[in-house]
Amino acid sequence: MKDMLDSLNIQPPEHVNLAELADIRDVKIDLSLPKEERVKSYLVQIKNPYCYRYGDIIVRVSFADTEASLEDRLKQYLLSHAGSALS
Image 1 (cartoon, one colour):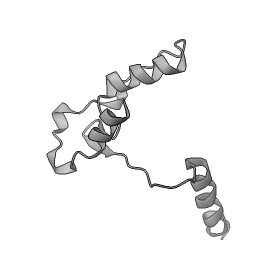
Image 2 (cartoon, helix red, strand yellow):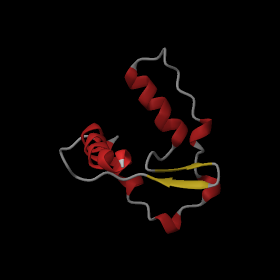
Image 3 (cartoon, rainbow, N blue to C red):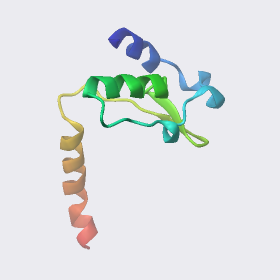
Image 4 (cartoon, helix red, strand yellow):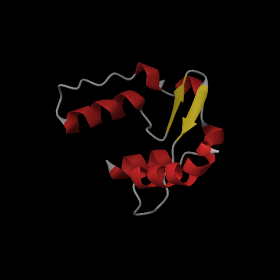
């Protein structure tokens, strides 16, 4: 599965056809399924988790090669902007 995901991630944005992309608003997740089955269902529905659409907007997702989690980055961002929100 990792090889398949890696190949989807390297698709150049200029080669993306909007009509061929899955719309994330159409993805439905059955929360009664086990986690592994929910992930499989999501991948089947979204087709490419790195490039999909929201209506007419193309969404391209990428991740930095780092040990920091998304939660770590969000905390860092919020703390760095807390001072400006108070002024």
